[in-house]
Image (cartoon, rainbow, N blue to C red; front, side, top):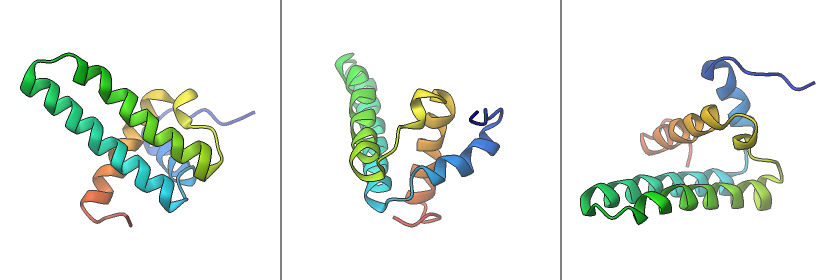
Length: 101
């Protein structure tokens, strides 16, 4: 039986093993950047469609990375909150040059 993670601290090393392909990681970073851009556009314009576009865009990029490059099942299906947190942490580590692009 697969391990159930109780804390994000325990989950994040597993998250990183699911994102070893550089193209997949780049797709995640681009997708997360676009999510933030959609949220900012929604707040700036008041247009609710940007808020709908945010998860569609983010998951679209991430899932292409998983299905075509990692060849694995996204952790989102089993750990939705931890996976989302992992996406933002990976994004932050990448844009602050703490993790390789």
